[in-house]
Length: 425
Length: 157
Image 1 (cartoon, each protein chain N blue to C red):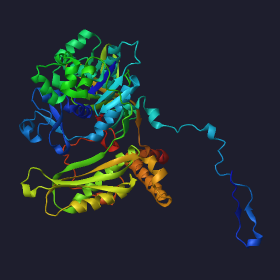
Image 2: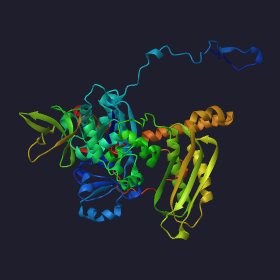
Image 3: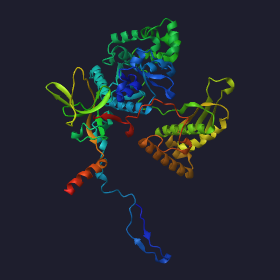
């Protein structure tokens, strides 16, 4: 059996742990630049009808009435809460795959003689007590079934938060309740196709002949089909594979015309990407830099350009990458456009070890090692004293272009100045 | 094993060893087998790090327990509150610091300072316990001036 553990409205729940005044009220967390809702409380979904992606400005009425609270996304907080939940889960179910910031799969094959439902109920209670975040747990024979079980736990078993599909009757019932385009791996496009064929639920889908599914939806569809029949086709990924490319880019809070702020922003994104690169012990041999204006301006004000650069000596050194990235940016920058976004994508990632052994000449190898040690020191300092404690000067200091996060809560769990205050009065 | 000899500066013919014993580069310390992990304050104050949070105190109602304004609290949510435990509670959406106590089937959040009143759980007063405070950290140097005042009183007689 496999379990899918999924935090309920994770960002909203994480905010509520440290801000009790947000509980039992409709609220949402906004996307980068405070654009739209990306996590909503149940009250916001059900009473106010706020949907995933509802733009912030469309909620003005509810804001003014005081019916709604809202926050910018506080990823530092969410990441730390996720780390805690993951740890607690691992103490119960050691075979764990972190699937996203708020979901993980657990392989329960080693729990042969346990009452899984009871274990799951206790785990859910433990996570709630230890972190304050409510989760739902769905258990099924495959990842796709565990996903379905989790959805049912969320919809129909709100108080217990657990749904265990351990009998054929439960599976059948669950498949009948699941619309075909809600099945993990089917998606809207094939969903439409299936509905046109008269296949409305996951139950209808598993009763199709296998050849028919293969013809209609290729091998991917057949995999989902077999998963729904209880066969494990999607393996657990205990070790995340190395990322194939790392990209960072964000829209500015207002358009930018000058080169300097563009350079600062790009340098910051490079620094961030390079840190991720070092975290996974890789170097990159290529990168792409791009700059663009808004797509919603008249044609002659529109501009999008990217450039790919090969690095002779693959590296993860922030300084080197910033230098090369800025050279590239200057080549695509044209004065006069109002830029909305710049970004970098590190490509052609390779393991760090490969480089030390073969590619460096002895002199540059020594230099490379030195840079590597320096960057390791910077990473350590920034980890313990907060991001951007040590920065490259190219990143600038005021960062007026930076992301709009007007409604950011504090970093309650990672910064001593930001911890909760308790009244002894 | 490599030997390193140090010589005093002189003419090439009359080099005198300054330090004749070999310095053994890379010789293992005889204490290496006895090495232990460093003392970990986190492990000492926390039963379960994934459930441990920190909080700052404002107010003086727990002075009897040695908790002063601006002290740092370790809040461990993995602990079940027992009678006498200091807890972070929530009343009317505010974090509040008190001690948990039960008596004759009634539940209380108790201050540890006679100028404050106990809070009893009732129909009208609901509270929830957010976490247990197993340790608090007092910045002793911040209290130096208060201490000096007391010393002065004693020494002046």
